[in-house]
Figure 1 (cartoon, one colour):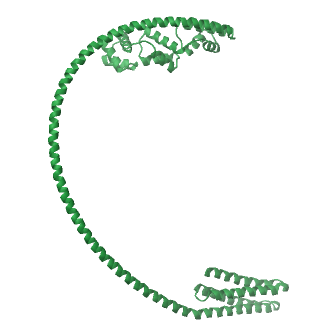
Figure 2: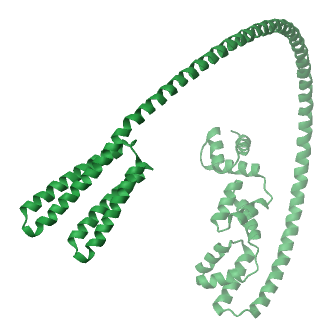
Figure 3: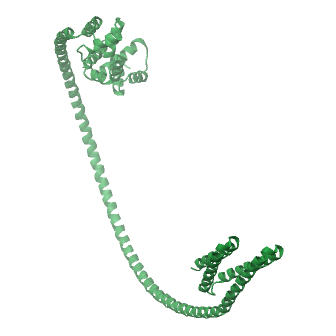
Length: 413
């Protein structure tokens, strides 16, 4: 609040000076009004000074600055009255007198404040002494309360320590009892473990005897199983041969049906002469051997057809590409040996998709162990191998370690 009042006093003082300057600078018509405004600012300044009072030391400093300013201004205007011409002398003396008047007024205000200040200081000192005495009394009461509180806490601590001592003694007695009980339980457990160990040893010996008898029984059953498997394999081979003959007959019927269908489509189709020829050649190729889709297109291109004609032909014949994959897989196995993965890779190389190639390999009748034996014999027909080297070569060709080992044993290594 005092800061705000000081700001208002500064503004009032500045307004007073400004309106005084305007009264002399502007014409005579506005002089009276500017002097009135300057007087109003001075009145406001004095009123604010009375409100602030004598307790504000900053205000006393401010009054000192104003007094110094008024004194300097009076001296300056007096010098100007003597230095400048006669036309400005009266005006400058008037200004100097105004500054002296302001100086006297400020001095009176500062004097009244200075007289009141010692009284206020005495009152303040007495109030401060009473406050300090009261604070000391409160401090002594507080210390007495703290001392009583400490004594009470010491008594409570002693009671608490006694209770803790009794609790420790009870805990130690309980732990000793539990330790004795634990040692007794450990002794009983140890005797139980020894008894169980003896029983387990006896059971183990009985189990080994039973296992030996079981192994002999299993060996006998294994011999009987192998005999049955050989018989079943022979019957399965005959059954597979019969199913193959039936499948060939069915394929022949389906081929004839496709030829009739294709002939009908050929009549309805609007292809060019070269495309119709390509369709006919593609069907002829499929009648005596197996092709993949891309492989058949390449074969037609080799025969002189354009890629467009070859593609048209392959797209306009009735063919099951998975069935072609089965046929080609069987054809490969008819003249050489393959592992399962090797045969899939070979069909993919011929242009079949991985899906069709896998279908073709999984839908043929083949003994992969027998294929491993054939490939092992083929390798030995043109070069020499150690047992381990031949196993690794067959594994590299895609056979499992079990099949490779079986094959090497069958060829005499």
